Length: 305
Image 1 (cartoon, rainbow, N blue to C red):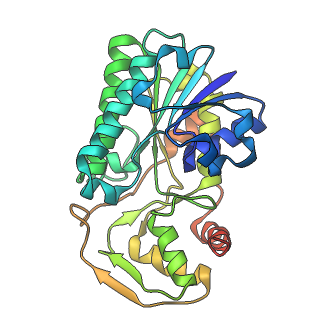
Image 2 (cartoon, rainbow, N blue to C red):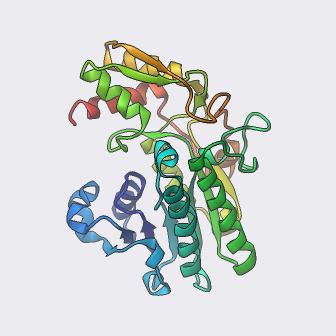
């Protein structure tokens, strides 16, 4: 089976590409990162049919011989949504439209889209299940909510076999360095202050190996069970941001100064209290690494960076 991964040089894309190669899949990758700079793929890049291009320029030729598409390509950082909202929305929405247009009319088993828990930032009920509609509060969340809407439009109009994964905060070795968990751990290890924006808003952090397990399950589960479905992929436990910072201190074995800042726009009252029962029931998803264990594994990696 051949699988195309957009954003293959990123944290999520490179992680799933490596797992797929281990399992004997053929992998084709699309990314704007030049092959010589795709350091996250290390020594496996020669095993990938790597196409150096933007998804805006994807065509049906890129999908020739492919069975499944995994769409990871995105502007993935919430803060950049504030400083560059136009780029964030264009990249996440129109990039997805381009992928969907390339997929239209192609005989594919699944098109699995990496959405985000940020598509549902202001819950209308709790716990948040997979059926909760998008309800964003900031530009990044709006871009991910719109991404889901266009995916369903192409599914209903053209039969593109959509599966949506709403991923929570993903952390662990190899993680993106703009994620707050990385920044906190790095600052703690280097005896620098940690910035806490707000504190009572909540997150549901998920260790990278659990997230990759969920993606493999989605790839290998029968299409009739997953196409047309949304799955919440996270650990399934709600933490206040302030509590996650305390856990980072514990994992690093030291404390530093905390600089308290106001909430980011729209984040006061934001909660990530998710139900992952649907993913457990249909995919057989079973996250194994809790926050304490995951942070300990992550701090050991951050110490080497």
